[in-house]
Amino acid sequence: MDTAVTAAICRFAAGFDGAAIPMAMRAKARTHILDSIGCGLAGASTGMQQRILAATRIEARPGPCRVLGESEGLGPIAAAFVNAAAMNALDFDDGLDDENGRGMGHPGASIVAAALSACFERTVTGATFVTAVALGYEVNNRLIRAIQPSIERFREVYGVCQHQAIGAAVAYGRLMDLDEAEMENALGFAGTFASVPSLRKYNWERRPLITFKDFLAPAAEAGVRGVSLHRAGLVGAKAVLDGPSGLWRMLGSDRFEPERLTDGLGENWTLGFNTLKPYPACRWMHTTLSAFEALLAEHAIAPEAIDAIVVHTDAALLRDFMDAAPLSINDAQFSFPYTLAALALRLSRPHWYNEATMTSPEVKALAARVTGRVDAQASELMSGQRRPAGRVDIRLKDGTQHSSALIVDAPGGVLRPLPADAVARKFCDNAAVALGDAGAAGLLALLEGIETVPDIGAALSRGLVPC
Image 1 (cartoon, rainbow, N blue to C red):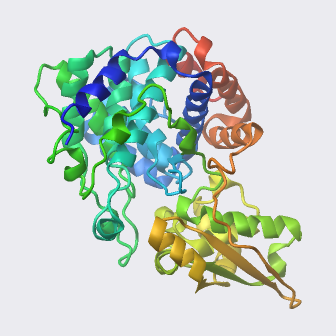
Image 2 (image 1 turned 60 degrees about the horizontal axis):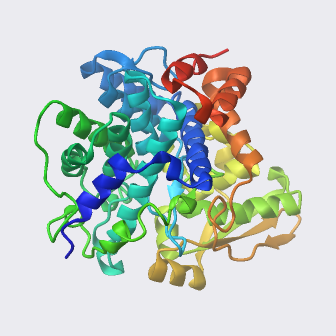
């Protein structure tokens, strides 16, 4: 097994010329920076996020790094933790698909949150910031592909985002000017600080679901902490990605393909496979949600006309995602009945999980009309490829029935990308929760021109203030 993988990754992360990143990949990185910050501003006001922030402040001192939605900052490690949590609070943040459409984490929340801490500690140009984020995504994407387990191991143990500690350390370390050897030491800390792969212990059978459902915040924290400990002169694990006891083994996989990390590194970019979410819900539900939304639009179906909704999808998704009376914001994000009701009522997506929405009699009544049936084709796709698919039937009170085809490709991915205007609208809707409409528009303009900004931290400090 190759024992030089970590060295190659660190050489790339510390030394790759940002000007050599293809323009299309830089543009993709800018889009994901925009989306991540917007998601964080919308998520910052949730009760769950406020409790996370309160718990963090008990032991974290005030510092220079801005906390999304707040007037006071924290130190870099604590800020990365809470900002990543905010970005994921609504489950509206980005993802990564492979060539077969398998979901592989939520990289933006960990990587962008870590990079944000750096730009408030020192002067960072917008172009340098984009470079660091792009490199963080590239390492992250390659790593998760390289450590994909067999389907048998996936059914036993899996961690959705623990590997993102490495991508977070790359982005933050790049902005802290680490060289190749220094990057290796920092990644050694980040990898061994990563949380355990815990998808099977999300409380699927004993609700409510866990608060840190994908552990993106600990990944951001581990990345920044790894760099900080290196800078303090401490020693981390050597060659953390390499060999039979490398990070892939620590994270529970039974397979490692090191060539996926290094082949074509710096030439063949993976950022094109990063996805954006049109719905604030688990990505595995997006095919079904898009099928339902298309039926609503095609037939101009009013919510009061709906008598019943039937979801046809994989048996395991029906087992875990059919909670019609969610106990928490996270339960609602994994609920077909709740999210379909929110879509039918045309609710504003950043507000799907407000207290008023969660307790709405209209939402509850519609959610109670949703049932599920196993679809054989969807089950085959899920069991063989971990590829979620779904279709929907809607029966109206006058007896009319409308049915969708099985949707296999989720919107926001490679085959169904979100248009640029939809990305901008999503950002403005999300950012307006914290900044108001005028503030959201101003921040959109700043981030769309991020590569021309001489000091992105200073500019964000002004742009994150409500108008």
